[in-house]
Length: 413
Image 1 (cartoon, rainbow, N blue to C red):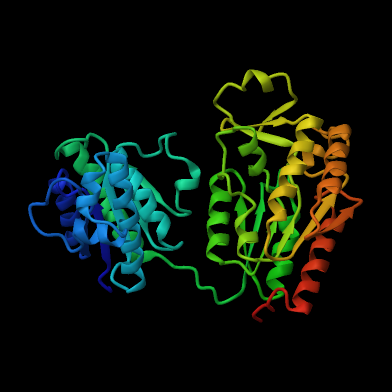
Image 2 (cartoon, rainbow, N blue to C red):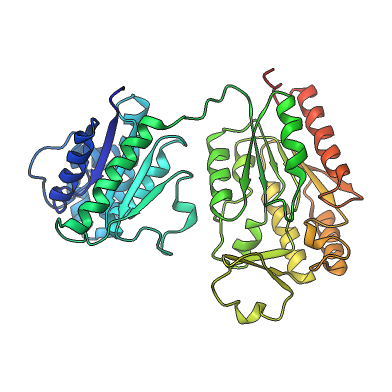
């Protein structure tokens, strides 16, 4: 078995024992360790492979500057920038196969930046006293980040925290050994959707696109799925996106905790990636199901999808605002955009006769988007529901036209 190297990151001045125990567990399982110190004030007991001075320099600063800031937040952001830069350099140079970061709120804040700097497929773990906390915004989380609660480990080693640390050591080393990184031997298409209960186009589009020689990744647009989609779009991983469920834009507008961040529906455009876009579930705001519905939304038609997620219907006025926001975001795109507008509904609950159908609201959205559609996009109005066969046919017709004209590269047969 090829020996794998794990980057172990933390403040070695205050957590030297814990970090060295973590390193010992990794080495004990046959892995190698590259240590990175992100301390500011103190020094580790023994020198690290990447010193705090190296880290600060990678951020274009120095430890003296970090100390002179006289503010722990400012100082740690300097170290976060440097640590993220150094981690990416080490990975590009083939020096590490995965990363694990240990910390409380300060170390976690830094660790999120380190993990976000590394591409999808690089094992990345954060062992934190605030793992899974609501204080961690979705837009800060790497697409494939893993977190383990550092239970009982705020200060000093004990049998409770050793359980967390040893599991984390095995997890990151095992992941580095087992990971099958994205191959990219076929052009990749990114698609957004929800489950087959309300959206079904992917059932027909995925095999049709695979027959054309493309790989298709379908992202569940429930916050973190959209975050992963945007992260890969920002990397330029897709040759084309089929962003048919940009409903996370609505969630962000309405202040829902189910969010993919402020840049949803923007990164493909920033990178000039051809975009096929549709407004699936534009009419709904998704709320965390185990929380009470906010009073200003409590009188709306709603659907409890499960104990985790409840969807609440938007008013016609709110739908017009959504149409304007989608148009505003697409206006900034640097590549071609083709918007498909199904006028008979955009999710199965919204079909005529469906439990959440609102003909007035649907008409308001369609009219507003037609009015606000920017000049840089082509708008195709479809006399069908988004789950009907004509929608899939229209998507494939436009996609094939882009392939024929060279806008999208041909698939790999």
